Image (cartoon, rainbow, N blue to C red; front, side, top):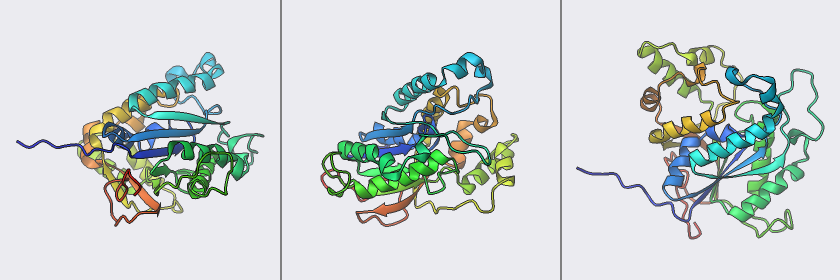
Amino acid sequence: MTTSVRPSRTGLRLMAVHAHPDDESSKGAATLVKYTREGAGVLVCTMTGGERGDVLNPRLDRPEVWAELPERRRREMARAREILGVDQRFLGFTDSGLPKDGEELPEGCFARQPLQTAARPLVEAMRAFRPHVVVTYDENGGYPHPDHIKTNQVAVEAFEAAGDAARYPGTGEAWQPRKLYYTCAFNKEYFEAIDTAMSGAGLDSPARAVLDNWPDAWPTWEATTRVECAEYFPVRRAALLAHETQVDPDGPELSCPLELEAAAWPTEDYHLVASHVPSPLPEDDLFAGVSADGG
């Protein structure tokens, strides 16, 4: 009988840049667990505290929960961080909320910050942590929340600036991350696979409603990199549920049995945006082409 041997990631580091607490658990969380357990350093940088979020769990939709939502979201993030086994840092900006049509973004919120103001703490974090790989959202933010769009802009700016000593003086010694990826969490092929699997198992498929309402203009990114991580889907689910104000545990989004999801779509998927090392595509590893001693 043969046993699989986990590769050693000792000395390698990955930074995931997210907008709010809970985003790290819904977009690429199983990948973070995989690399952490293989020995890599993983840091989640959370740009805002999620202060203007909603309470999406009907069981917690009470005045006293709303009153302490900012504090609760930090406690939820602490629990999720422990479950995932990663390090995490808040970068100090205020949630912009999701304005209705015609509404102005709140004064002083993250999405209204000048790019260099918003990017500066992330450049400092990159220079301190020295990640080989950076993961964030695409230009649409994964979905068009103003904080997600701003997070993309800030992450790209920091990735490009962190290695240039002339930029952002006073934020530490220059460090150039090797690779930048966008998550492909909102992937039509994924929803099609889940719909087929659930329908085939005789289950109601919430993915069908997603597909029926898929925007024609939704940006599509080729998945250049598919990371096998299905064994960590239960950890991902537990971390997401730790954000108890943000998740309805009885909602349709969590109705697909984990074993069915693992069989239908056992990867988390990414688009390679920029690389300073040779790495032929397609890939099955975000660290492909990277070595801890300078590659």
